[in-house]
Length: 225
Image 1 (cartoon, helix red, strand yellow):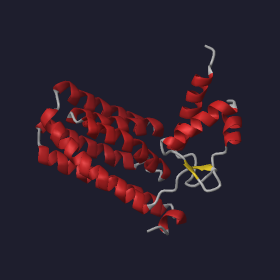
Image 2 (cartoon, helix red, strand yellow):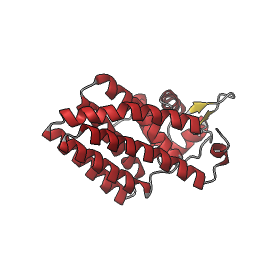
Image 3 (cartoon, one colour):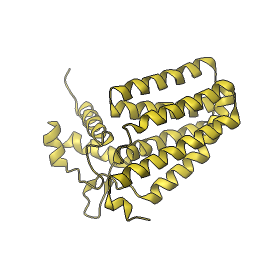
């Protein structure tokens, strides 16, 4: 099949995004268009299009010198993100406990199984994708369109946080247990238990990200308030 400019930009987009989600690039490191072109073996225009898309989605930021860089994670950004997640997703799970159908519960079970398989194979990009799908499906089950839009939007940012902090290793085993607890509350139709399980999960995810970064002694993160 002949690759068109559109398919080339898609290829470049997913190649670069997957590298970011694997944690291949440290926080603040530049992604130079010419270097990406040589690395991927793709011409400049599709690479430029891919980089622009990644910038729009928050996977990259533009510095004062207009250089595209991997974002630098701050405590304030992390705190605000998870504060918003706890407010929204605790309600999402409460609604899912009331509205989940048998086939939707089966889908959640399959996603947890898939995430566990990806974890055993240490496939970080797939782990990240399965995690996003789990949270997005919960929002879909809630039946609230705005909740789903929020969760889908924030998922990319959280996936980036996990990659930047390298929190896709042994920590995933804990996250999977927390997903199982959320699912069990949905099976029981326990709205209060589901909300509590989600709040615990999101708080623990935030704590694991902070712990991982502090252990790595990333000075750029530690000095920020």
